[in-house]
Amino acid sequence: MSNFNFRLGTRVNISLFRVRGVVMLNEEINIKKISECLSILKVYVKMNTKINLNDICIISEDFFCDLLNIIYGYKLLNANTLESNFEAIDLIDDNNKIVYQITTNNSTEKIRTTIKKFIQRFDNNYQLKFIIIDNKKNYTAKFEIPTDYNFDKTNDIYFIEDFTEIIKQHNKINEVCDFIKKSFYIENFNRKYEWF
Image 1: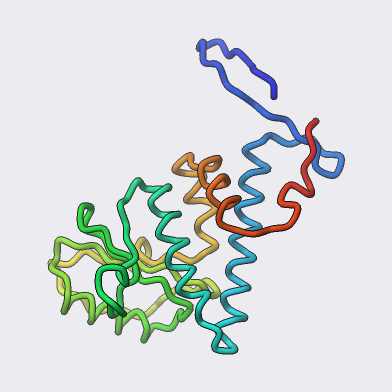
Image 2 (image 1 turned 180 degrees about the horizontal axis):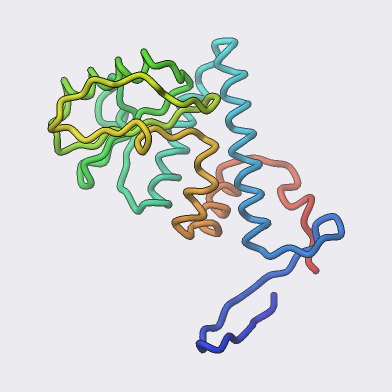
């Protein structure tokens, strides 16, 4: 690990690695590890749900709960710990008034059904968001929601592909990489990376 002093007097630790003959910064390597693991998760979840092995969906809820807490500083809980088989909502943070639906179904009807159930259960102080573990989709349909509720399909529906950029924007690359190392069993996690 090398230390560099910049003119502003800030001391920054920069790790240089060699990846297949190319020198890369530690942060770049970590974001690539994150991207790789999220891609694996997406494929694994999709393949298992196609053959009705849905236990991975429950595990994914806990994974995204912890991931979102790291990125945004939320205090999300798995809603099933509060109420068995909590309908339409998977994660909830009563302090920040936010709820998430984690789903493998990217259909417009799934979004509509969840919104309807959300409105029946939560007041307009709560924000509904979706994480969809499926192929990215642009929704052209309008989602009916009362005007006193705050929902925007452009900003409140996330796909797994969006998370690499979100993690970078919130400057949480190293924290998320550490979390992913603990969450995923990947034999030889550092197999492509060696010290420079």
